[in-house]
Image 1: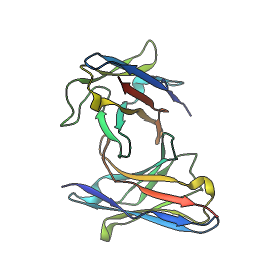
Image 2 (image 1 turned 180 degrees about the vertical axis):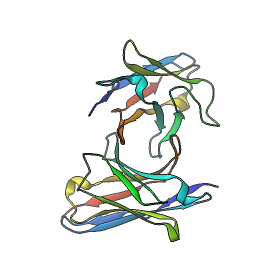
Image 3 (image 1 turned 30 degrees about the vertical axis):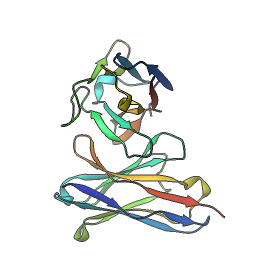
Amino acid sequence: EVQLAQSGGEVKKPGESLRISCEGSGYSFISYWIGWVRQMPGKGLEWVGLIYPGDSATRYSPSFQDQVTISVDKSISTAYLQWRSLKASDSAIYYCVRESNYMDVWGKGTTVTVSS
Amino acid sequence: NFMLTQPHSVSESPGKTVTISCTRSSGGIASNYVQWYQQRPGSSPTCVIYEDNQRPSGVPDRFSGSVDRSSNSASLSISGLKTEDEADYYCQTYDYNNWVFGGGTKLTVL
């Protein structure tokens, strides 16, 4: 079964760093783009960016460029989304998705809470 | 950059047909494929329509998608509404390596 397993929820303070993960299984991890989607509390979906595990090529939404970093470790079939300095406004659910010709597999989401 | 505009909410009765629109602010709606995602409360989104009018395996044929160049919009239609269709629906497309979601439409089946 094709799955994306995301890391558990996080509670952080403003200014702290964070890296969340997304492990793919059941398919050739290096052959599909992996994307990240943000959903703030009670709000809609926002595309953050994506990465191609085969060559680590990345694309970022202009809204998130320079705010986050997407990376991958293909040896363990895992993609990452990281922040150097969290803000309260980063509090949200973050979904990882597999992109074929559409977002065909979604993780269960990682809830990030940033509060002092 | 462009935006995708959806109605905030729609409601309809069980057994009826509902249509949700998605209007692209600039650039042609037919320039890039449109997808539609369903998100039930507390769950991850799932795709119900991809490439304008294709249904992923397992999605009932009650769901259909279309594109209208004259109005520069895409539409998702759901016929034979069931209470289980009550959810948020998002359109999505892309341009120049930038994916864009619509703001979402809350469908109430009452």
